Length: 258
Length: 352
Image 1 (spheres, rainbow over the protein chains, first blue to last red):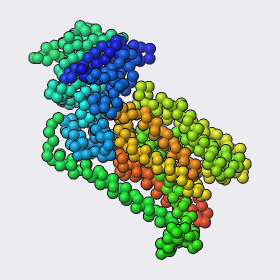
Image 2: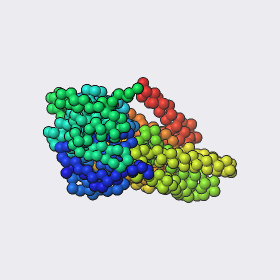
Image 3: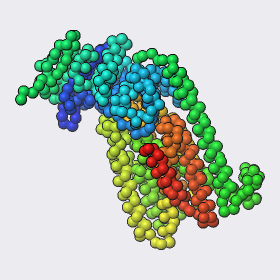
């Protein structure tokens, strides 16, 4: 068991977003969290990352409850990609990625050449190695997003939590990032939990899906059990058509009848 | 992940790894030499110039504790004053770096949260009531501590980090700005009701003045302790400057780091303001210029800004006491007059 929740409750103000969530994610699985705006997807991910306390129940990573993990050990277990970031200072791209190696040197003041090699490999896998010396504040939105994902890869953890990783990416990079995540799960046994709005992309890379209704109800399971036209249409507030194209499923919103 | 090309590998090894440390060593050695040169310069210059040839003898006299010659006496006075200026400037620059990292805002300075305004209220009240010099210092320190405590109580949520304050320190910043303006209103009130005889010393205190500030061990201890704290946390400050709240997922205890930065920079500011009044611009411009020159990496920025801040205030104070000698200007005038155009120049070069 990689990460699990036990009777987890999430509140925002008086509103209950998720109630009684009992959910298990095993190593090597790739989960997509689906739901409408404000359904609690990011709140759930931030709770899993330990950035906010649960309002009831608890989260466990491995066999240990989240709050029993020392922060430094936890940083070698899971990485978190925030939905957005703000850059106040003129750090370079390579410094940004190297900062993700922090959990690995308690006693070092400067990074070693092994850290640089890992950071550059992560940049190369996101196709941003040419930007290594650039000031992060001068990057485009999509470039910044790829640098953030590269930093996450350099953190080199078995569990990856990503809040809208495809945000701001162009079509080609949406596909390549998603494919890379799926390959990490398949080949290296990593575990991915991500939030996304592109159902077709989510379906093509995920093994499982967690659907949040935003009123406490939820549904978790293998992707084909959860991502069905009737369930999706009911949950997302708009009817969905699923078209089979070869071995792929294409999800499109049903056209409004005028 | 794809394999590294050999070319990339070579770039990586030659460009970053070893060079980072070498560059840091060169930059810091250069700044230490510059500081020593500044010390010698401020020893020589003044209304009576000590010829360079007399310097070694005067230094030797000083080291043996003799102040028989004129040169040795002057040197003693000037070096003491220069050292006080260095410690004060270094404290202000270091506090500026820490405050900017805490608020994740390069425009923050040690005074932005009103700690110096609190010190001003204390010091001016003591000056108005014609208290002894040590009571003025004590009142300034007490004022700074009082404002820090109020800030801490009102903005605990932001300092703790985590749940409530996602990525932001807006509450802390706003609370600080409001407390600061409340203190400034009290200062204005005191200036308007103070008797004429006290007014000049009150205004000089406000501008920041090194004259009559003796070299004391307390600010040195505070500076040394703060520098150790900052260097030990330099890596964590980098991660927090980059990732804000999400730094917690990289193993940083964000709440503890924020509280530490708040208290240590507050203590530095209080000690600097108590020594020499509220000298402006050093805490804002020196970190800025250093970040521009050596980059935002706190591992190098912290020692570099500390050295540069000390040297800058030492040179500014030398200017302040020589420019219209034998009259002396308050050093705060010099830092603001030189600082403002330097800052504007840098800002506009950056925008291009």
